Length: 376
Image (cartoon, rainbow, N blue to C red; front, side, top):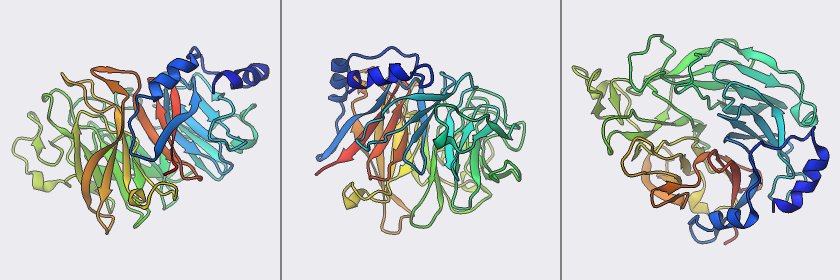
């Protein structure tokens, strides 16, 4: 896979820049993928390798996949021109950025969210090898790396949704915008708070059934191995408060800030997830290639715990909804194997449903993007 694509990439250098990560031996890569357990009929392959610190994913109208990063400071483009389910090359379209985790595409423009600002690259698909100068969209984000890595997406209302995580494990927000999900117009004007009491969301999506926002939220640390659970939340309207910093998972009071407050004041999660699993880029499956039982259901990449004596997460979970699409009825493992014993070789971050119905998964530890497909 990787070996036969390396020569054309080198011939394109320096315009088509490879990740600085060393190439992994093909046999070792395949050995890792063989560890992933999936339901019958599903398979996983590499869509791209050597995508350093791969984080949020977005796809353009022509099928080019864009990838943000965290530690690498880069934004990548992964074109698959021959539609064979593998990226033709890894192109670095931006470098030296401040934690450019978030990417979104609208009207042919690529939006990139750094810790402190959002920029836009216009007509990007025609300029992958010679990217345009970025246009500043918004530069008033809280410039703090603690929970400052942005997951961004355009909602059904055409607005850009941008979270502002708490710059702490737990604390009283010093500004109203802290611990929220905000939204703004595509040109950066009109910023407003949509949801409050959100400690740190790095993943959200809108239901294909009723266009309601759902999002994951990471619980606080240092309350022990099993408290609190991470959250899957549903926000049917603006102005709801989801508990931070007073309550976590709907019913776990913060030892310092929850005293004297009622959990009933705050919106409870639609579903409790595993404790400290670091649930990130959730996605509704809207394709048609997976069996019907998976359609319009929620897939959640769990990046994996650090504040736990026994590691948990490092997998993709599935939350099944009831017939109304409004209530979560089950929580189960869909894909696992990135954690072997207590040693991890990969950490799933973000999901993307491609037009062909397959699903991409980014991994910022293995520096890769995988493709999960179903053949029955």
